[in-house]
Image (cartoon, helix red, strand yellow):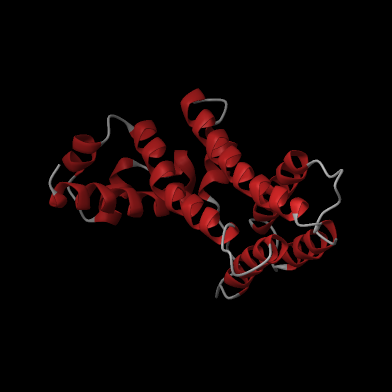
Length: 196
């Protein structure tokens, strides 16, 4: 595939994911997606079989690089495993705190609420992405445990799942909260959970 075609597909995925994140799956029409990407409607159907196919590819487009960055941050040798985890989430909290408008939208959260039951393939993709995130965290927690930063009897799989689910819950609360206190609460609890 030549780079021009790839660039146009990536542009539609990036701009369309923004629209779908803001407006939800049902609220985002194909016309609005192509307008955001400044491409003709035919281009959408050249790259995507349907809106559902677009959403699947957009999930991979958005979360593939994010999972890669997460894995790199949690494997960084310059800090202890505990410091890596706390530092990563502290940076995310800082990012959200800097937003001008307290309007938060989570692409994966929106799709899971709207589409998990209606589209088994989208539900499965959302679940797979969330599971990969928890697996990355589990590996870092196991390293922390091996280095004595966590108790020897800690269930790292369970702890990783709990932290990942708590973070998703915190992002969901941001959709209705008018401040970032929920993120501060998350960080406080995370620090206590990871206290050696």
